[in-house]
Image (cartoon, rainbow, N blue to C red):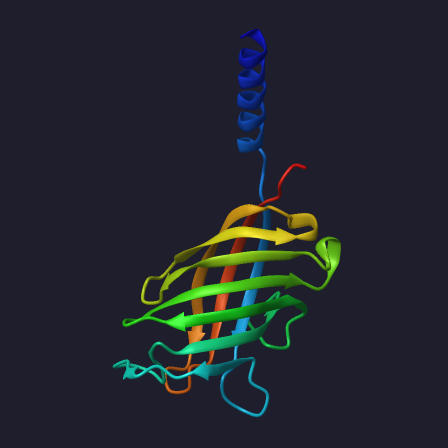
Length: 170
């Protein structure tokens, strides 16, 4: 019985220490280009029901390999890539499943796995960090996502991401 109590106390202390840790914070600009000669996002499935605004339909699936930069200009220093996909819902909402692949600095080669619902008309949206690799293996956290600029006609967009990642303590 005493060993169960000690185990419970140890786990409780470990959990409370994990909560007190500080997240690693990244600030990126994601450049989604669907037009022009070198797109970073490509529609691979066309949905049957056009949305009232923009070039998308309910059910569209878009695969992306977007640059992540330190500033809003596409020529800003490259920090990584957003690689994955999103699907278009029957509203101005998409579901994201992608990895942030870090390509420089202290975390070069590590990834952060992101998933969640993006209700585009909201000024700030939240996605979940559901894992990662390298320094972020079994990570958790969240992403605050804002639209920096968008071309409603062709779908090109710049998104501002604030990523807060709690690496697992292994």
